[in-house]
Length: 200
Image 1 (tube, rainbow, N blue to C red):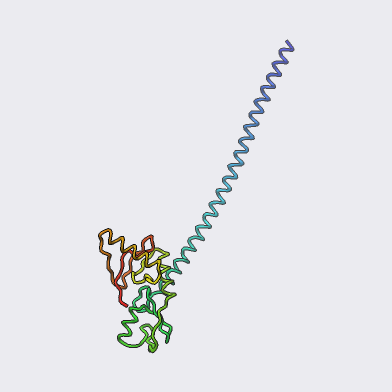
Image 2 (cartoon, rainbow, N blue to C red):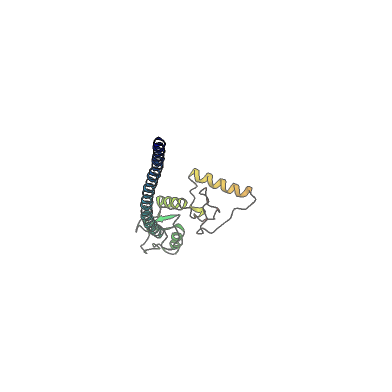
């Protein structure tokens, strides 16, 4: 009987040790999960802080870009008609730059700069680099470009323009016309969607 009692006691202790091991394992697992949750929470908090910081930086950058865009638009507008100067000409006497149409209109009336009234003696010169910069900026931003701004001496632009007009004609539509200063939307192929008549 003593022997049976000892065996029962051993089994009871063994069972209790197994239960204790199970409970210890569960406690260790729970502690590990709690530590992981704490690490995850700390990482989530850091990510939130970084996200908030990035949002502030992004908003600041967007604000700067917007200000820069307004400054560029203002600097690249003809001082007479306030339209983008897709055909800018510079007067050598004063250095003023105006669009070709406004310059022609002014020089028909009198030989003065339409912006500062300086007398014009020498022939104005086209501002080719400014023109290219303006057209490239507008195309890059998906803005509008007058048909007359397309450089037909540039083979790539000429081929794009020809393909665009051919496509319109094959669709049975007559290519749209617009005034020389009216802008046309640039499509995803960087082509004006409607050609414009222009004077030279």
